[in-house]
Image 1 (cartoon, rainbow, N blue to C red):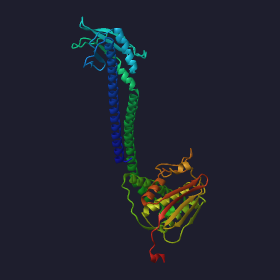
Image 2 (image 1 turned 30 degrees about the vertical axis):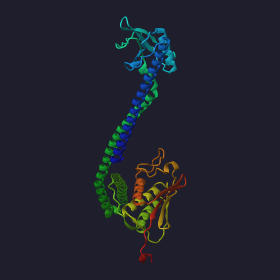
Image 3 (image 1 turned 60 degrees about the vertical axis):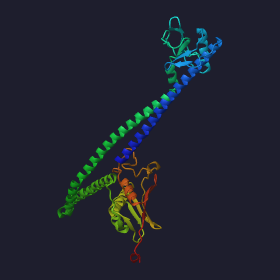
Image 4 (image 1 turned 120 degrees about the vertical axis):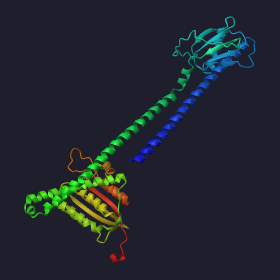
Length: 433
């Protein structure tokens, strides 16, 4: 993953996470406020209903204002200006709480004029009989209000627990969100660490590959000297060794060139120098080299190409490389006796060039991944064909840069055909005639 792409992903991820966390926090705060407001309103309605019924029982009128004073979040004072019976107050309070579906325990106290203190009444469980709120609050202090004369106070000690209970789903979702944020942060750390390791590995491979170029050049020169030496040519054994050295040089140099080209593609410094190239001038050398290999293995190479010029707009070096890769793969994966067919068919202004083999073929689940970097079709514990899985990746990248469609047709047991569609340039009239 490129650095700029990774940076954008992280920035967008952080912005999205911050937005979600902000919305979740706002939702939690708002929901808490709504539940708190709902609790206070229900408590005030219950207390007002109790005050109204006590006043009616005493044939008294309620004060014109300040009937209910909220001293704190869970403590209320009710100004009634008439005599208050503790048992009546407790019964009416439970009745009102049941009516309003406010199932919370409460404790109450009545102001005693003689002692100028609140006379504690009792701690009453929730009207629904919910015994799981086991609080030993008997004798807790309920402060008086010095401005009033006839009043009682009611305290709801489990108000906070009641709101928490109503917000269980909200807090559960918040925990899920927190875990998601933690996972995102962990994922970013892992991605950055893996990217750093991959970058180090890539730099090492690139540097090592460049370092190979000098000794490879020396080996090529030495192998050439050996092959041209008359004394070595006369000695069959030494001549075979010299050829072996040259062949291994060609093989290793080809792998090094693949790695270097792919490194340039990934860095974005890959350049394709397109020019007019006649495919007919490139094919003979490639086909002759392939035919020599197939003949050596008692195989066969069949060609079926148009005879007229086939001008393309392409980079000749990379065009030769990808055709060499495809022919090389066809030989390597055709078994002990390779039978290769190279054909070209005109379709309008295009040439469909196909390279076919009669090898074991490729299963459907592997065909879509053939052009992935480092991917090789699994062959179990047998690795009779050497390679890094870079050849077809390089072919796909070159075709992509040139705009050439590439297609793979294969079935297990029937062989594989790879087809590239080349746009053909117009042939000058003088050449055409």
